[in-house]
Length: 260
Length: 223
Image (cartoon, rainbow over all chains, first blue to last red; front, side, top):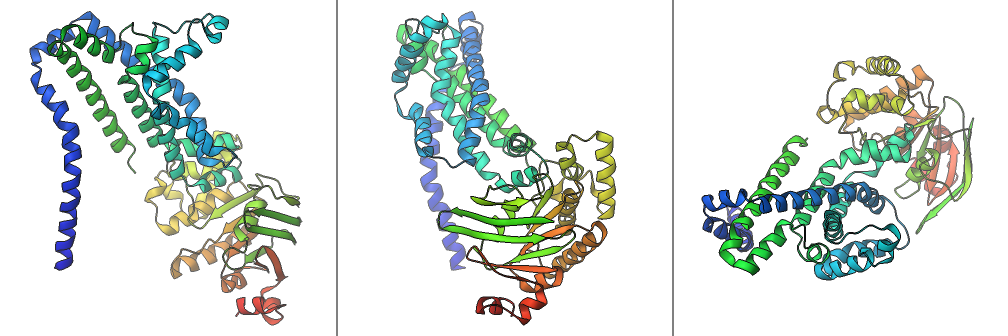
């Protein structure tokens, strides 16, 4: 009886500490959502500028995510499966985009890939003021989310599955593609989703590289700066709602479709 | 005949030193020893999964061995058919050939009615037979069993012993079995290799080991 009571108190204790965090996130988001009238949102949704910024944001983040998946999955696999000299250093590199201010990331990217940089002059490519620049900025700041989540996914797959596959005649590449990747697909997909969401919300690095075409976070800032809070609210609400709905949809797919 | 010649391996404080012995075709050899003796690492070297620092395994190449772990390691994202057929698919066999071979081996092991099932829904005994079927379907030169009965209850253990004996009889399979249980080794194996601290302590038939242990360790182990 006493044990039961202790258990209940412990759960209460955990809830008491968890609830403030959840409310801290939920209250600002929902209180401002309630302040935006559906009519305002509907009118804002008809503005070409808003639609264009949403499309640019979602599409650029999608390109960044696809590119990161292509290069990031091999890196995540490498970090999960191999022991090598300097591994901690490589893992440290992946923390850089998370710990440096994103405006600084934008400046660094601009110096490396800008029109007057060695890259810009040799390739003739320009990343300033176009969607490529936006995608590059999003890629830089959000790729660690994909790699770290995928790496954790690979860590959960017992390496002996691949060992069995190799003794059955699979090459190491085949063992990775037919066994490890399908078994870690839930984490890989979750990582892609996280990266995409993080890319969508990026402001600092994108602002430095490409103020135009305007992404949704920049449009929000632009409207707030030029016309004030009331004018910035509807587009903010639209971005939050669409992103939230997409996240809920994909998260439910993740938990239901792939559940064993 | 498969030969292990002066196999040495070290990683951190773990060490295998100058392991040499031979395997005759159709023989069952048990590698026994306490935890940390190097049994499983040696098995992975034989399987070609780890390169030894020194020495070699002759007359055996990768793809000629099949490895079975104690917890079966059936691929959970594939159904039973695709699990059994995996090795043949990797060998780029034709679809019809794969289908025929998978059905034949599944029938032999009485799991042919389960081929469409997800392997996560199989019982312990079915999983056991499934992992054997997946290994046997590629007709390996050597079957490697890594502590196959370590986590099993008495009934399943007995069932697996009978199954190993049957497979050995029907396929004349060379088998290397890792176990820390001398009784199991003497029940199944023609010869036993006793490992301790990464070295071979004694090799012989179970009877020889029991009657003439070369040192106290073997004597205690075969008690």
